[in-house]
Image 1 (tube, rainbow, N blue to C red):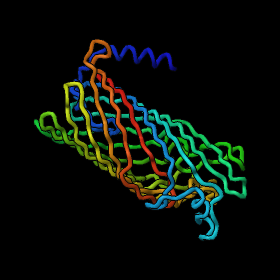
Image 2 (image 1 turned 180 degrees about the vertical axis):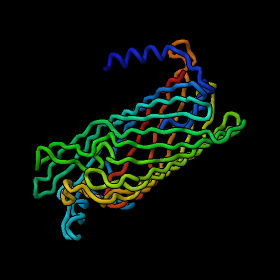
Image 3 (image 1 turned 45 degrees about the horizontal axis):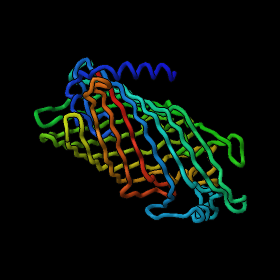
Image 4 (image 1 turned 180 degrees about the horizontal axis):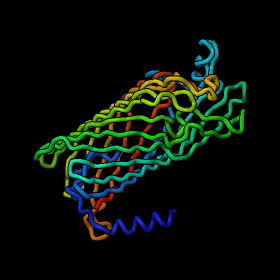
Length: 343
């Protein structure tokens, strides 16, 4: 598999991009955004993104908590009398995202996004159980998204389009690993690779151009219409809003600053194989949040003969404010590195 990917990459990187306006670095938004641009009739684009994230802090609402305080907090299964037996200490995630776009018409672009995810969580046991740390891991395919982008309006200064899509439950909700009490324990909600449900979504994306400056806005909303998954729960609604501004320093180089607000609703139901007494990560009441993040990014389109017109981008995302429903881990940072090739 790897050798075929290397051959494909070498072949494609040696070809030019003929897509409309793709020779300009700022024709795309920050690399973390999906569905931020459309294509002209007959154009195809492939993309790859590496998303890395790390968490090392625990919060309840907006207040920071120590591991000891987490294990003294009431769990969701004992009417406020019992406490957690374990506490998360840190978590790392690495997500490989693969995408393709195709425009059969000028007013319509189809998009598909898939992913492969690796997660690692370190947890600490309560003192009565030895107080040591242990790690759990999960890896696998994530959910897959299909969408269509519809052109709404365009003039010399503005581009506006609508996106309609469906998230398919290709990611597992039955990931298990070794723990101190079992050789095959179902891992917590955040360690699962998918939602287990069919989730429709829509987005509205607008970009305004002022010479070398561009200002973009995107609103994204996802909901659940298929009810509970096979484990008797479903995630709440997701609302995401981004505002960014970019400046094109050179024809092939631009930078951008982005503000992003993300809301995730609470879980309905619960997985009966996850014991909420064990850890906040297995307690359904500890899901849902509001986050405000700052993104700083760079886009580069190579105009040299080698790697000609292929797009490379990087974005660092840092938390400005977070409010969690219950006890959860807070992101320290997130980095997204991406490559895009169109023809």
